[in-house]
Image (cartoon, rainbow, N blue to C red):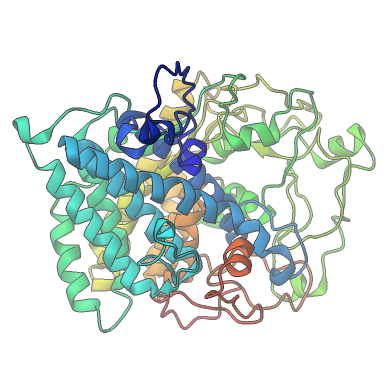
Length: 565
């Protein structure tokens, strides 16, 4: 039971007054908490918090692969993505969420607490689906049996784990459908949906929708998956702002509750920002579209001023702050960039300072000038600086913007719109796909603006780029694209800022975006279509073996023949 005390995060101190000799009683350690004596709501609290940490750990691990934050740990995929880097994901998944949720569900079943049961199973399903999406085959059937002496669980096939997770979602919906006395007691504290069973049900449907879309990539599963997709599209899904599945941070210092990206870019000491947003993603948001009426003119994405915050108004000003701040030479792109017509390298004006994909060089003194995360989703500052203000300097400090009261965008309503667009495009319904894609773009822009406004971060009049101009550029691309998924996938990708998991899945399914910046050095090795196993898993499990670092290692549903990089 010591592990339970550690995992549940509480400890009971008991003062014992011995008045008689009772051998059985004396053999019981009063400091050890029995499962039957554990508090269901306290365990649920821990599971929900650990789940948010799990999401952040996975997102932070895979988002550099899709050029959201820059891959800086090495020049090759094999050196930049180490098994040790995934250890936290594994422990949060198995030791914290899955095991504790399983314990909580058992206790809730004894008391008829159907909301607890449903929420526990939904969170378990998300974790299992995500582990498969990231790693492929994982332990399941033998994974939670350490109490039975099995410390070396074998891996189950990713497909069988998917089926099990979908079964958990089905079970959860059954529990949520119960009413009256059969529904049991409410959750005392629900950090996601405040105990709203309807919204948890919409989440269960939405998670199955994305799982079934992945399953439909398999010829042998397509017919069954398509049938379920049709049924799910007619069911209640996450399709409104109120239904967004997010973990919400506050601005408290003790205990630390600010968004992880905020803590990275907004230090207690001014000008100590750390980390790098990928140059490709910065450029794509600022100048990735062209005006259909004048291809020489680029079109800004309306979301970039919410996603990013420029600490300087120009690269010249960055050099004025510190001549040593640049770790690269902007005027000398590598030859393979030139050959592939790569439009961004090193840094670019007006004042965008990120890092190239696979730049494993050292870190210069650039904390006061690099581009930081903005108000969405990190709870940082909105970029309200005019593009004409080349001499602007505004280095970040803790307390700026929304002071870290951001969110983890785990499943947003516009994700549903883009999934619908992809499903319709694959079925040949081009008009319907275009409508759903436009819904996704509009909902993303509107809700991100609403989020910023709710945090007191409002752009000056005329400062937000034109939504109509952006939509005109996107729809021109869509109408002229031979493969409509190229445009749908690209727009889904852009909307996923803060959620590298969905961007990673989207890229493997659709190959979009197709113009992503290559690694800074040539010959980076194969791009990881699944992540290497954590070191704790392969080093401590006699039945586990590491993947071939020189292979792509596709997950079971990845039938995409394109050479992703």
